[in-house]
Image (cartoon, rainbow, N blue to C red; front, side):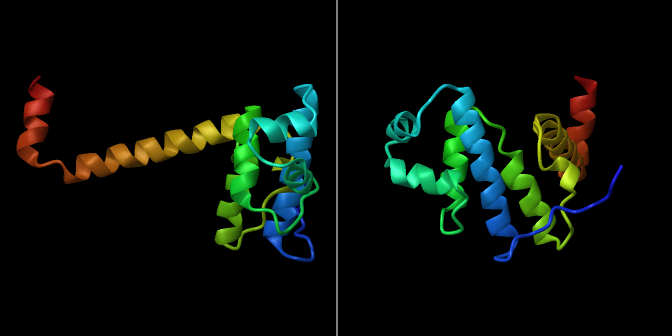
Length: 135
């Protein structure tokens, strides 16, 4: 298995991310049998706006990419997970660029939930812990 990283475009990782996201949105829209006009209307936006999203225009907003993803029932890990890597200056693995990231998203949610449970246990007063375990 190659450990190549997803190369960032000339305008940086966010622009590259928008390009990849735009392709996913376009693919999902086509699979759903929707035209750009239909999806844009469903979202209350213009067709030109959607064209810019799907083309990966660097001036498009990530919020708009998320909005399209939600409307199409896409997992949003293709946007959010690379942002975590980039914010820590870690190369995002190229192997994760395509495909459904729902399992990885669920794993992230479970990890955060487990971490939260540990924090709650740490701050729970001892008298509440003994009462809770007796019940």
